[in-house]
Length: 523
Image 1 (cartoon, rainbow, N blue to C red):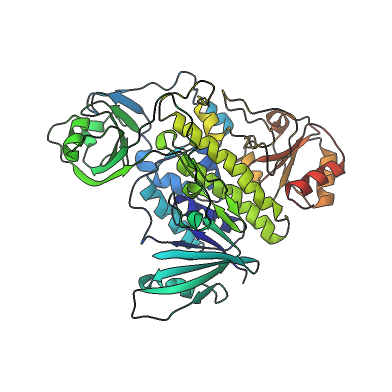
Image 2: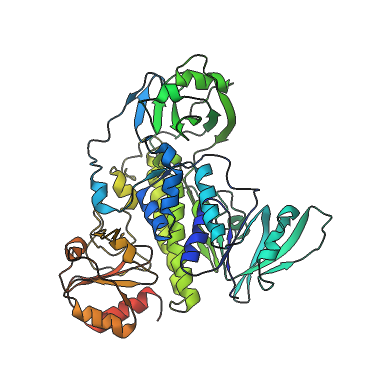
């Protein structure tokens, strides 16, 4: 049995990574120090790019089903209180019909504590072992793999029975004690263990502040109040995603399930708050029953690890990058980390790619994580100092407009992706164009390895791909216009939907072979 990839962290990113690896035929094991998935709503908005990734691994429909309760809760509102709030118009420069032209998916509003069990169920249905109550205490790279030492609470020692003896060793047999010590052998380790990552600390990877320089200091304290209240009568006809209120304190109310579960978020908490009274004041309905479930105090931060890879260990999600929640990019960026890394590990393990492909994970995702973190910070605080970073106004461009300029891509000289709109037109390093197919999308043609998408007259590229064993898929006749190629041109796309190489017109077989070898670090 081949060694699995060990994933530390069974949250949104860790579970998504396990599913992505399974999709590419790579066995995985997931451990988490907690007793279960998250009990807090936390992340709620999953953008269309994330839903494209979940579509590719076969679970988008299950996620949409879990999100049905909030399907009507998309509006933004503002007012003195929720009761007297008014709906806000969408930004004047955004035409949401544009989304139909660029993606087969839409964004999805579903609370993290609802989504994680959906992912966990999918992980278990695929036979991927999951060990909750399991804490990593050490990690070392040795013998062409990674060995992790963990402690496992005895109520969950079924993890031992789920794994091959070549994968796990039980270091003690103290069934009368409170824990078992285990050693897990893996080919690679993925740290999805959150902002306070044990693995990042063990590897001594710096985690510096990447905040843009503001004209005035940003907020240093934030409070999230998770509460229950039946607000069906208040919200009927005024369903919302977020509602900005000014009384009794400046705050935002957010829907968790659209009726009973809610969040109040503020960066200006009272000195000695009576939170039920504060929540009632923000709702604007005297006497409403409010049950405060939890109060989380946290500090808005913008941090990106200096390295996302050390040997066979990789950082993903909050272990790699922490950002403020105001652009809803944190969990989405982490799930995109998973999509980027999974196919690369699969290609290296299968022998179709050289180990250098794994370094492109750091090159690409460090740049993408920094971009998302900075853009999130710009939306949460004062304007930056003159000459600094600027806000990427168009929300679709923020979601899917980032362009890899290094890593596993070949520049074709087409220039940079526009910042003021989402133009997915086949530039290398960008998400491939979406053209509707019968019951699907050109995005569905990507994978499991690199795939050539030629124009209808690209006979030379088709012959070259056949000679070199490169998969070929046939898009619709509209493909050349969408990809900005001639009928005899072609694109080479990656399993994560990223354009790796483009030829506008015809070329020789050696050009394609050279690009293929370079992209997969086969030199």
